[in-house]
Every structure is written in C-alpha cells, then in structure tokens.
Image (cartoon, rainbow, N blue to C red):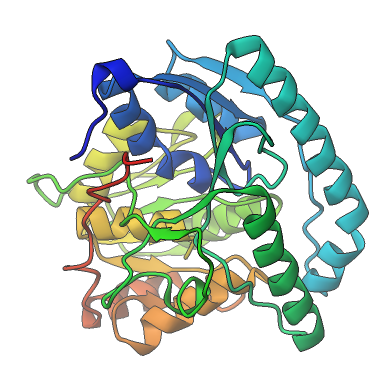
Length: 355
C-alpha cells in the first residue's frame, strides 16, 4: 500500500449516500487506511448509513446531511425517479451548502463523495466515487439524458472519479463503468470491509438484507415466510440490515434473526455460510468477491443496475439468481452449487491513497 508521509496528512471529509448500507460499507476500508496514514477523517451521511458509520467508527466525527428520501415506486420506477428530480435537485443544493459549512467549520482540505452529487467545494479538491457511470434505464431517451447529465456533472464539479473496480478483465461492473472516456476516471480496485477467513462452514445459508424500503422489508418477509413453511431442517441466520435496531430471535428451530451485525461478526458469518442469499447490489458483490463466498442473488425490483448485474453473473454461470417475485428458497438452495462464484477478481485497490 502507498501511504502518505506524516507531514502530508490532511483533513478529509467523506460524504456517503444513504441508499441501503452498501455505499457506507464499501467506504470502511478507505476510512481505516486513511486513519492508518495519519489523516483526520470527518464522516457525513444520513439515516441508516450514518448510524452504521457511528457504530463502526465511534471515535470519528459523524455529521448529518439532508436526507433524499426518494420514494421507491413498485411500478414505472424510472418515471417515478424522473418526477422526483426537482426534489433531488433541491436536496443536492442543500447538501452542497451543508458541505460548505462543514469545510469552514472543520478545516476540511479534501472532499470524497460516494454518490452524493452536491458534496463538492470549488476551492477544495473533490473526488467522486461511483461504480455506475453508464446509468441503465429501460427508456432509451431517459437513459441517454441521465448518462449525459451524470458525466457532465462529474466532469464539471469533481477533479477525480474513483471507480471501485478493476480496469481490465476480469472486472465486476461490466458496462456500468467501462467504455466511458472521462479524464477524471481512475479504477482503484474493489473495495470491501470483508476478508477471507478459514472457518468451518456451519450454516446452510445466510441471508443478508439491504437496500431501500419498502423492498428490503418485502424480501425479509418473503424469506422468513418460506423458511417457516419449509419442512427441511436448516441451520441459518437472517441479518436484517437495520442498523438502528437491536433485535435477535429465532424464526424457527435452527434459523436465527438479528437486525444488524458489525463488520467483524458479519465477516465471520459470510465465511461460515455455505451460501449467502443477498441483493445483487454492487457493494454486496464486492463482499462476496472478498470472502470468496457462494451467492444467491435477488435484485431489488425495478432497480436496473441490480437487475443487470444479477443477469450478467447468471449468464456467466458465476452466481445463481432469481427475481424477488419468483424467489423460491428451496429451488435456489438446490441450484446455487452449479455456479462458480467470484474467485480471482479481488485486489482491494493497492494505490487508493495517492490522491
């Protein structure tokens, strides 16, 4: 790893999107290694992502940012987002003004934003983190418009664009991030707070839930209902992904539910499971790659990025996947072993710190 000399340490503001927990979890190794390099790190987010950061880094300053609170429609998702653009623009403006206040108050020297478009400063070096330069929308007119605005915004307001992926094959994001020409782009390798552990495979399956509501709850209810109906005896754990809760109980004999696990415990669980049932969110895929875990993918309905990634890895015979509407726990458990998993892609970004 390339670390800064102690004389060159900086005060870094890291702003993280609250869209599930994935944006926050993938920034954990960044924060840890900035701390190891002697930097002062200030964190900013909202909702469950902010709560996770406070749990993982109790000694760091964690500041609230305006919440986007995007409504997640079950039908016509892209049009639902389109009609919320005025609200999204307002929140982006508000978070930008909030960042200006934080920069002045805390002496911020550099800003790193994980998918928060308003978190930049015209007088401070600002870096944008994303894995989705090429936004996927079923409507081609909206897709072209969204891609054009996305790239123009990053090019205009950020000095660098970090992509948590490998530039060459094999890579994780496929067409989401590759094939785009922007001078700011830098592929920094995959990011995960997880690591491979040599532990006994003591669980038949583990379900790790994440993503925006209400779909997170819908999937939780679906998995619990099917687990209860099954006449097979499983040893399993369901992790709810609710960082604000502290719930723990048995769904039925052998199947435990817990609302949230910190990094160390979740890492142990990933490695102790024969298979992880999860969303096909990008950060979760990086965790599967880091732990070399088998996975069963269930994309969030109408979330086109997750649908693309699930189909991409299903076609390549890497991960078995089913839609949420068609999910069948027993079928998935019977079929996942026919797929290879991600074995040789993880490198965790060796040159991340050379700003």
